[in-house]
Length: 407
Image (cartoon, rainbow, N blue to C red; front, side, top):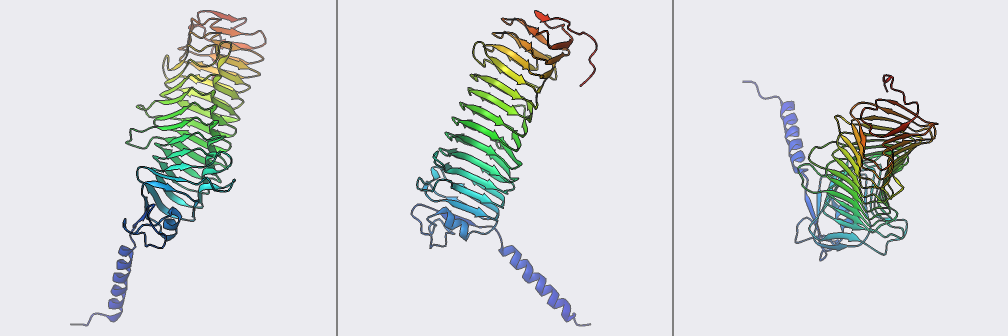
């Protein structure tokens, strides 16, 4: 029998050693407590760190840092890391009123798959941000309270961030700022009964550049402006069981040069100035969207200046613009609109008013009735066309009933 070749023995031994090293490189837990010491190993609950930053410094990629109840002052920086989780117990909070203005409580930079869970994070409205994220990929915030900061979140430099089952509140001027072509998702986590709430901020969400997605159970309420968009894209979509709400703000959504696509179930209610105020760009409402009880007497629920509005329900009554205090929909200054399967009823002014060189194309399935003014009103310097079958009371000289030429 030939002896086993020596080079094969060496190779197998090396493979075995490599396998052992791989198995030993598993993720581990670190612990932080208010009675800890940063000189500890921090790898057992009985030997915790005192500060979260010390645990971050001692951790390896893939680790979880478990934070006990209590408040932890001091800024936290996570830079060029992967697969790190910072998880709080009930009552765990991070705040430090002594941080210098212009700083952030938590800073994440050039990192991937970083998760924050079950933490209350407070900044300073005078100029300290709660969470600042730059060049971050797959950053997740779940079950957290982000509050009392100048910016609850500042998300910048092409970051991708998910905010789930969290509360963003009492930040001035902004709850969530999206900038630098970043992509942010506001949602409830899968298989969760919780809701993300953005409330009592001067601006709830400010989309300066990038994309905003609103999914699952989300409530944007009691802000001066719920969503303010300057450039990029906003989408609300598409879970059947979770009603998204934009309610009781000064203005629900205000946009300029932004493409907005809203699918329901979505309720916009009780916004005191406007449900939607649109300057240029396109806003499309489709599939189970209700806009009711918005605006003041003499005001407007949906106000479009120089942009394109599509009210295109999937079936009759899919879009409801009802019981608003003033005009239901106002198009002005070269605005345009296509209206399909939409009910505009019982509003305190005109149902739909088209003025100042604007155009409305009315398709099938619309119901416009029982508004205090005309159900459809088109001034002589504007243009209405399509089907008037569902309009009870109309003023539109020269309304064109020729076939629709398409989009």
